Image (cartoon, rainbow, N blue to C red; front, top):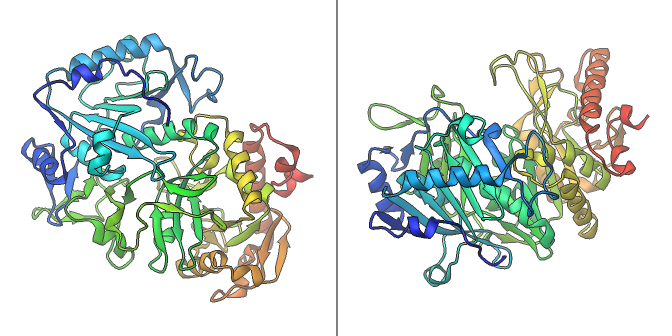
Amino acid sequence: MATAMHVGDVAELLDGERVHFNLASAPLAEYAIARQEARLSSKGAVVGYTGQHTGRSPKDKFIIKDRVTGDKVAWGDVNRPMDPAAFDALYDKVMEHLGGRELFVQDLYCGADPRYRLPIRVVNELAWHNLFVRQLFIRPQADELRRHKPEFTVISAPDFVADPRRDGTNSGAFVLLNFSRRVVLIGGTAYAGEMKKSIFSVMNFLLPPRDVFPMHCSANVGSDGVTALFFGLSGTGKTTLSADPSRRLIGDDEHGWSPEGIFNFEGGCYAKCIKLSQENEPQIWNAIRFGCVLENVVLDADNRPDFNDGSLTENTRAAYPVDFIENCVIPGIGGHPKNLVFLTADAFGVLPPISRLTPEQAMYHFLSGYTAKVAGTETGVTEPQATFSTCFGSPFMPLPPGTYAEMLGQRLRQHDAQCWLVNTGWQGGKYGVGKRMSLRYTRAMVNAAIEGELQKAEFEVEPTFGFTIPKSCPQVPPKTLNPRNAWTDKTAFDQQAADLCERFRKNFEKFNVAAEIKAAGPAPLRS
């Protein structure tokens, strides 16, 4: 990518006897256990615990506002600005904190396609964090490692806690992206996912000017060699539906769509494992072995993981190399996709199980990024709540949302790709009244769509949202396909559907996009 830039005092910091470069999995695991940072589970996986922060801290993330970012970033509640002087002062404090400590360094790549990959260096004060990034990013071959020159450096110091009044942070935790100094500075949090997602944010800033569309999605490829993409927020089924034994996995979370095709940003997977079972998700189950990092998973007296125990957090995770999945694609590169699947778990029970979208509708729903939280998922949530996350990943999108939506629309038209909206949520009533969509039926609909069978069906227009929906689908009862038919009380359906339409309309008011995209929304928006 771009020529590497000076990254301050990092080189001086790493010129010490207690700095370990590019250790393999076994010695990193040994260090983590010997230093009492982590435990070894009966399955062979290293288990790390993150303390107070068991997930990302979006309010603690800042982008340094300067000549590089000032007129490019979509500043606001998601992309919060920080002054360069405040960054420099905090950076110096972290350097002082890390000086003389035992540190672990990995030189890695983000991006499977050599034409677009970003060489990165990750500096950790925790060995299990260094094992985590080694498994999550792409590991250079020996000859590549000799030529490796980092263009972005991630420095993670979880033991350094900021003082908000002194340092200008929101709390003791901070995730700071500095595109001029090419540094990500993380402190006050041991949640390992911050390192992964900060580099994803970096790619989302750097790649669009190079005509690469960065996407928060999973990707797989069929026996015909044709790629399919799966977009969706947490809990919508993105990992489950893309992990299909009959198809080969390119990657489970982050990809780029270049003029040449699809490529995985990562070299590993970061799977949720709450309530994980061998029966339901055998691929993930089998990947949890030596070399895997478990995060916040409770172990019993015999060091056996209890995947049903969410006492520390529901956000328990497993990080492992993608080649721990038997049918993965190495390197993680695929052709241009012919089908894109947007996944939503509609807890209001009114969206169709599957809808065929026009390019304008695809851009509308990509910008909306809708799903719904259900009762019990968060404190105070007693009724379904609509959640909108732009581009199915707004916390990681530094540029204006329209930038990414335009790239989506261009590629759909250029490659004659079809986009589908799939509801993995409720039917026949909202959460608590209706039933969750059958996974067997959802798989059948998704498979029919990406294998081309569904295009042969007869379609009709669902009037409330303006979706085109199939009248039939192999292995799916026809009455399942129209959501209104599943409700006993049709008036209640109409009222609930109108309510969700209004939520879409209000959310979309913030977007300054072309009239044809606005007109692709639900009926009240078109009237």
